[in-house]
Image (cartoon, rainbow, N blue to C red; front, side):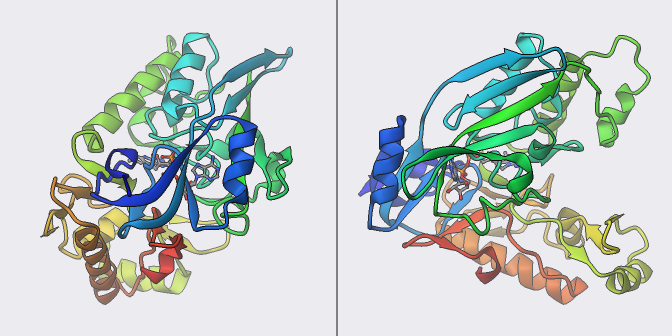
Length: 335
Ligand SMILES: Cc1cc2nc3c(=O)[nH]c(=O)nc-3n(C[C@H](O)[C@H](O)[C@H](O)COP(=O)(O)OP(=O)(O)OC[C@H]3O[C@@H](n4cnc5c(N)ncnc54)[C@H](O)[C@@H]3O)c2cc1C
């Protein structure tokens, strides 16, 4: 068995039967043809292993960044194994703005489309031109953005295509006409600045994130553990009567998105510890490994959160992280 402890950001003591590094198209094809249980990992920053994995883990490690330009935009092709944040920094340094709101999100470029990473009012789909994949037959092709099924923290790669293909690269389109996005929280304070640059936004995003989110190299975690739930207008109205300060965001379909962190906090769970797992006291949406957590500790704590939030608010939280069992992925709703 091979240890996975340093290959995922929760840092749990779990192993896999074998691992394969995937760099070249031939590696991708070989991995797809394996008959045993198999899963892909980039940086392992969005996964929870519930125990040892009885198969092969494919580590996506392909490298390369190509930039072309036309009068309206820069077009960037990043290989799947490139680090996302490093890519954001590299583009910024080369005078190519656009991705600054998405700085410091851990992980690889190849995993970015899977849950359509997002932060500070932007998401990958805003800049994605295509996603390059290696399919079951071994052919490599590009899927245009509009066929990727992007939504809030989701895509076809996370749902109907999960497990059937490997993302080998992403294509980004960054318009030359830069439009700063300052509508989210602390970035609003930068509005109206005449000297505003994308570098300033990037630095602000990095600084706010560092102050709020635990560094996974110090305290194991996988970022937001739960998705923000959407509830029907009737339930939202009822909850608001009982909890007048409850934050909620109206959605186009008439439902309301609630803040999962607020629900967890107001269910009295902030800082709750179970074995070596803890609800991060400064941000209740994040579950952390205080050092000695077992997969069982994290699963038990996550289940306690789901039950307690349901008992308090009648809202069922669903994990945002991918739950991995001995043979492969377990639907997040089954935790
Ligand atoms: C501290 C912290 C903060 C975070 N903040 C944010 C945030 O602000 N916004 C946000 O959206 N996310 C956030 N995340 C979650 C995470 O960073 C993203 O989901 C990221 O895209 C995961 O990348 P990864 O390479 O680590 O993927 P992994 O965790 O390795 O994999 C995630 C899923 O994608 C699949 N996958 C990975 N690579 C490929 C590939 N090449 N082809 C097909 N499938 C693949 C895996 O099988 C798995 O199902 C945060 C995580 C942490 C630890």
